[in-house]
Image (cartoon, rainbow, N blue to C red; front, side, top):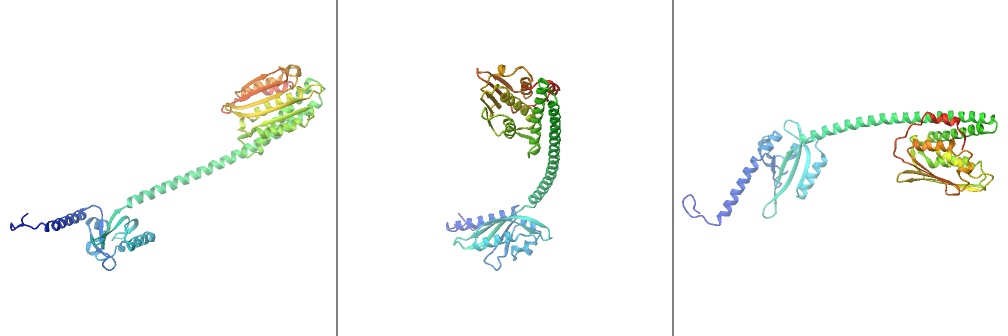
Amino acid sequence: MMDSSNNPVSAELRPVGNALMDAKMFAMAFAASPTPMVVTDPRLADNPIVWVNDAFLNLTGYTRQELQGHNCRMLQGPDTDPRAIDRIRDAVRRQVPIEVELQNYRKDGTSFWNAMTITPVRNDAEELVYYYAAQADMTEKHVLELAMKGTNDELERQVNEQTADLRAALDEKTALLHEVDHRVKNNLQVISSLVLLKARRTPQGEARDALQGMAERIGALSMVHRMLYSAGDVTRFNLEEFADDFLSDLTASIDPARTAVTAEIDPISLPAAIAAPLALMLHELATNAVRHAFPNDREGRVSISARQCETGLRLLIEDDGVGRTAGVSNPAGFGCSLVEMVVKQLRGVITWHEPGTGTRVEIVIPLQHEIRKPTAALPREAAMGQAG
């Protein structure tokens, strides 16, 4: 290689020339970069600014003369986070890189969010000679975050208001349902008392039996509404609790030494809409088994079970008595018809078994179904039918 005077250039000078060329190239690149950059010299008092590029001037609004010789803290202001400043000071003290985001201020006093990456620069002897910092204006991001936060806060406020309104409406509806159940229960008790009074004044026979059967059915319905009224959730019905109360009343009138009644009822929570039909069905089957399966002081047992199965609710009522045909004067009477009507209403399946000794009734009720409304004929038949 020849110099400008056509003299050969020593090979030892080439790396130095290349290094100078590289340094000049990097300086030009940094100066032209759209990323705001600043260099400080920690070897001088207070680590002052010694170089900035045009992008940094555009970001801050200062001139080079106003910046050079001053510490970067001149960009701080009243809303600059002291914790971010402490992090920067700690990194400078330990001479380690740091990434930090804080609020800085321009020359005109307006604030901006500044995301900085501060890096220590060392010479070949690993001595600290400069700090280089690249900046990024994050103001727009923070404005969007604040707007989103405001939107989220407003949405949360609206959701909370709607939730409160819904909760108030639900509480009002629950209170109304409690009141309805309470009044229905009271009315049913009054009706049951009137029917029993009429039964006592009616001579022995089918008419009196029919009145007593009607009163007992009304009593079962009254028990359902009493339980719904006292429950915390008026939309659910606990079959186990109802069975316990009902069977306690039923067995109180029989001789436990002659008729043994056992029950295995799962603690199943059912929709309140099927409470009344289930109560009528369980009342009818259990009452008939206890009262009609063991005539002439015959001893026996009655077992009742209610289990949740894959297809829904499985009820099983069985006894070892004389069977339906022998034990009931009218096996096709209203008791059987009522049970079959209720099972049909609940879209269930009923199977009557007579294994030779006693009666076994198996009923499967799907739990996922739309409950049919009772037909108008049901109350009228109940008033005219006979017990059993």
